[in-house]
Image 1 (tube, rainbow, N blue to C red):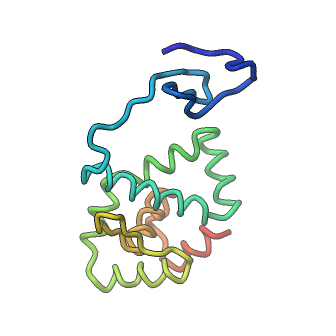
Image 2: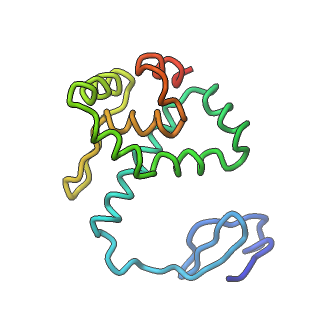
Length: 152
């Protein structure tokens, strides 16, 4: 990979330009078309990333600033890693239906909607909220308490 300084007569470059992709760190690589862009695994990963983005956007400024203070510039990456971890999915699936319904109700009340992909893969609002609880490391508090904490 080539490293570019002042690419294209500017101080920064990112995104795609013809067959090349530039990132913010100045690294250039050739654009590669995925051979099978809609495998189940890729569709599932995109669904998780979409949910993680929603969670990050709904978090209050205090939550974001605390996470930034703890993880500095990598706060969003850290949150995404924890959100995408398989453990919260397994834990959520092991909850009894009443507990899952409580998470669903709290999530919908908090502005989180269930997600569905074009291939009909779904993630309930409750699982998105459960993953948020896990990502922010707040498994030991009640759902309502978390919603108030998270939105602040």
